[in-house]
Length: 115
Image (cartoon, rainbow, N blue to C red):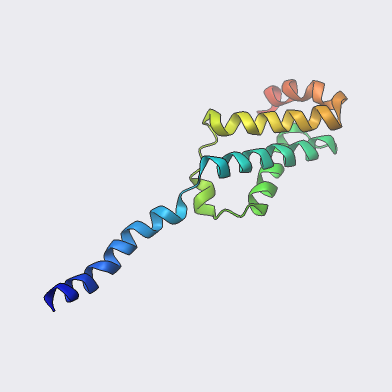
């Protein structure tokens, strides 16, 4: 009986301690998909005539709002890491080169001047 009582009282503590870690964990694949989405949305906005800065800011907001990840999961993604920043930049440039090549030529300079 004592063993059952101990199990009943300790199980919620173990579940409570482990649950937040498992719910907020983002796989690298999910983070890369979010980064690609940010780049794609930013590229669409840039090709529509927005400035690079505005495109990246609004593209990031749009991609994050459309993501299936929670805010805690999104916050756990470190976009300063190459595993996330490189796909984001690649998808931004890929979209702009394919859809607005004249503007794509100015993108790098515009990013460096305004950011």
